[in-house]
Structure formats: C-alpha cells, structure tokens
Image (cartoon, rainbow, N blue to C red; front, side, top):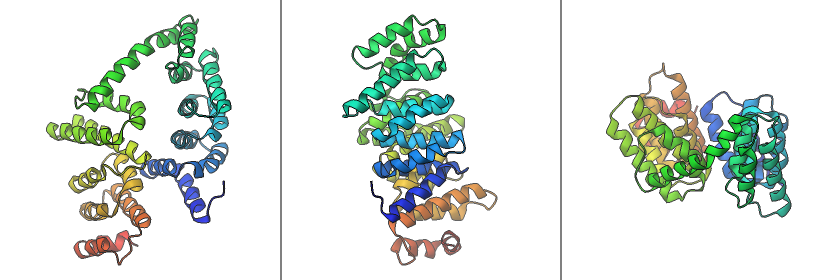
Length: 336
C-alpha cells in the first residue's frame, strides 16, 4: 500500500510516541493509529519486530487489534511466543480477526487459538485467554471446553469451567448498564466495558458516559468518585479509538470543570477527537494550573497543540483570538 509522504510522517511520529514515557502521548498515539487503520499496519508490524521493550510491543499490538487487518496474523502469532502481557495482546489481536472474511486467514487464526488453548507448556492466563476468544463459536467452543475440563492442570480446568458462567454474568452487567442500571462498582463496569464497548452502539456509549457522570457527581468527592471518573475516561477512550466525536461535549465540559489533573484517558481522547470547541477549555485549564503541576500543564499544552494542528487552528482563527484575548500569557506559551 502506497502511503503519502504527509501520512507516512504522521504514522512515523505516532509510532515513536508509542515508546514515549508520557502515558497521555502513548494512549493518544494508540487511538490515532487505530483511526488511521490499514495505512499504518505495515509500519506497526515493522515497529513490533524492532521494538526495544515489551511495553512498546504491547502498545503496537493494541493498535493492531483495533485495525483488524489480516496482515497482523503473523506478528500476533509471534507475540504469543513472547509470553506474558505481550502474548495476551497477541491473543487479543487474533480474537479481533476471527470474523475475517478470508477463509485462509480465518482458519489460521482459529488454528492458532485452539493450539494455544491446548498447549500445556503455555502460561495459564494465555491459554484461558485463547479459549475465551473462541468459546462462543459453535461446536469448536464446546469441543475445546470439554478438552480443557479434563486438563491435568487444575487451574486451567477450573478456569475453563467457570468462564461461560462468568462471561454470562458480565453480559448481564453490561446489558443493565446500557439500559441505565449501573453496577455499584465502577471497577466492575470498567472491566466489563473493556471487552464489550468496542462493539457497542455509539449512542449507547454516549448515554452511558452521561449516566456515569451523573453517578460521579452524586458522590461528591473521594476515591470512589475518582474511580467513576476513571471509568468515564475509559469510555471516552473507546469512542476515540473508533474516531467518534459524539461525546466531545463531555470532554470539553470536564476540562472546564477540572481543578486538577484528570485520568490520562481524557486527554488521550482529546488528542484524537477534540475539536475547536475544546481549545478555550484547554487554555483556561492551562492558565489556572500552578507552575508546580508541570506534568499536568505539559499534558494540557500537548492536547491543545494536537487539536490546533489537526483542526488547522492558526493565530488568525477566531477560537485562538478568543484564547489570546482572555489568557494572553497562556496563548504565548501554548504556541511557543
């Protein structure tokens, strides 16, 4: 696939950002690469094979998982051989390709997941993740479940036996949440949403964000409120991975109301889907943040510049003129 020079430069910069120590920058790069999709796949595969750290390999695989491109099959199989979190990320990539319309690619994916499920030398969590990726398939899922129920490793056998019931319970939690009945635990919602929100209707995710925000506001302050805010940020990040702006207003209002650092997921989402309506909120937050919160100021500035660059907001733009009029010092620093 031919990549235009400008697009190629952007992809290169985003892949470099995957290795950055700044979590906001890294998460934003994952989201942006997933939006770019097939054009970035070859570069991502090359980045995986030259990655200096396992953390970079996981980040690359997360971007490939959302891209859902059959070219990722080979590198995902390599990842399973790397073990640990890298292997789990590889299983997730293969799971995303199970419905590939290419018979050969689909067969290779299924064969790998089945073999990994039954591989007694593989890590338990990797085996169970592989089984959970295929357990919903007619006949195949039942056959592998039966094989694992008799596995000599008691932990694997118990995990395979429990998985269908646990997943059914999680499905009910998710369905209740979509209908407005949130669980008491934000951690439970976040865990359930991790696997189900990528395929949920965009309108349903928008509604859930509003429900979570209402629950968050009703708590007042404290660790529980922070947990609900983290769950809301994770939902925003899912929308960003899908390139959707249906809840940008909530991102903007959250920045407007924030009086301190937010979970990285909020700014990562803004990097990808924030629009010109967000730049004033970011500038206001930057201006009121004290100098001793340098990391938060840096993250706000990075989001401001990412939006300005993407939306072509120059000094002549009306939104920037409003920023310059209200926060002249911040405007100078943000465009330095």
